[in-house]
Structure formats: structure tokens, C-alpha cells
Amino acid sequence: MEKKKEIRPEKPVKKKFSFNNRNFIVFAFFLLLSFIFWYLNSLGKDLDTSIRYPVRYTNMPKDKGVAEDLPSRVYLHLSGPGYSILRMKVTGNNTPLTIDFAKVSYRPTRNRGSADYYILTSGLIQNLNSQIKSECRITSIKPDTLFFSFK
Image 1 (cartoon, helix red, strand yellow):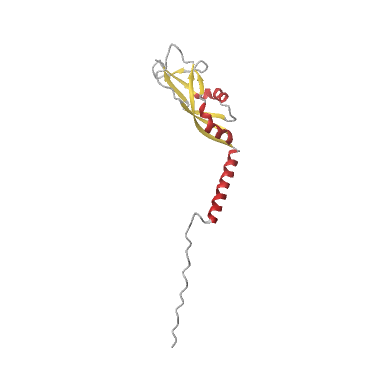
Image 2 (spheres, helix red, strand yellow; image 1 turned 60 degrees about the vertical axis):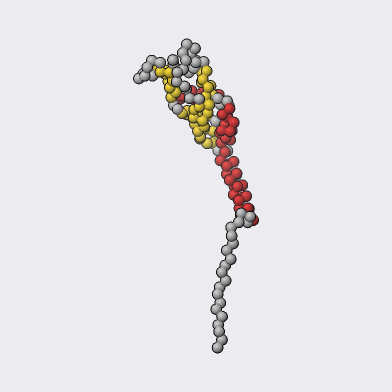
């Protein structure tokens, strides 16, 4: 009697994942290239974003000193081409915007003491837009009100 040989199917050899795999390198290269093209395309469109920007105050009343510190940075909500916004985010924070106390109208608060004042930042937008040398325009500023008091 002949003994039948059992035929077992061969187990498939599993390929181990390797970063040296040529297909992976080609895939990663084109994935990176497509990301770069997508990013450049998105920068060409108009974008809305927020950026934290330094502020400097000038021409404070000489007879009065500011007791509470005014913020040294404000959030500017910008609208404009992506390239201009990227340029402002990278290099624009070097030159602070100037708020001139001689040109802004600060008002006393009603419910606090007589030495407490405030400035509405919505009235500063036109002046600050002329100070930023960019194609972007400021749509709003946060905080919307700057509170301070004189000594």
C-alpha cells in the first residue's frame, strides 16, 4: 500500500515593512511634494487669521502717569492674501504698532473712580491699518477695550 504524502500549502512569506523600501520613499517624496503645492496654492487665496502683535504707547499725559499697565501685545484679526499674512507672522512682529495718546480719545468710566479710563480699539483700526506695511487689513482688535487708570 502506498502512503499518500500530505501536501501542505506553503505559508506565504510576510514582507516586513521597511523604511528603506523603494516604493515607500517614492510615495513619501510625492506626498511631501503634493503638500508643498497645496500649501502654496492656499497662500495665494485671501485668508482670515489672528496674530499677536506688539503695541507701544506714546505721548502719555505728562502730569499723569499710567498706574495700571496697558497690554504690550494685542491680537489683530487680519484679512488678506496668504503670502502677506505669512510674511507678517514671520517678520512683522519686529516693529510695534504705535498708539498715540494725543490722537486717541480716551474716556472716563462711569461706574469706577474718576481716575479710570478706557479706549475703544475699534476706533484705532484705521490708524493701525496705515501703520502695517502690508496688503493685509485689520478687521478687528482684541481686547476690544483697553482699560487703564492714571495715578
